[in-house]
Image 1: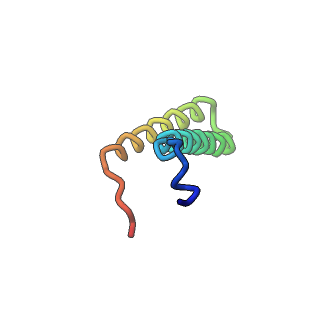
Image 2 (image 1 turned 120 degrees about the vertical axis):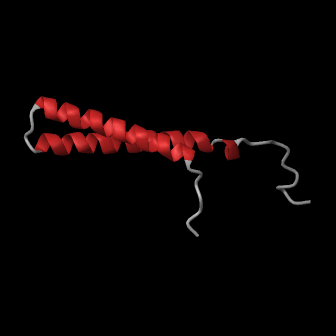
Image 3 (image 1 turned 180 degrees about the horizontal axis):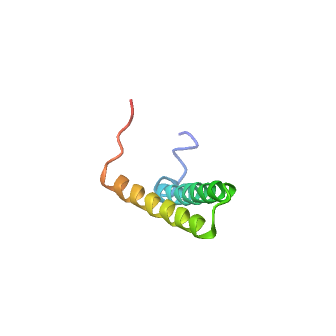
Length: 77
């Protein structure tokens, strides 16, 4: 009998995928929104323009995530 067959513990690593997706998604959302705001601010725009760009980026990102939830992920072969 191999060592792996005698291992009685059940690990939940396979069920933690949602946490990985949440962390990577939050990181992506923060980085993309922050880079959009920094790019607009670098163009010496007014504070209102920076705010509008940031809110537009957040709304667009939210719509993208929402729309992606309806389309099942398919492998790209």
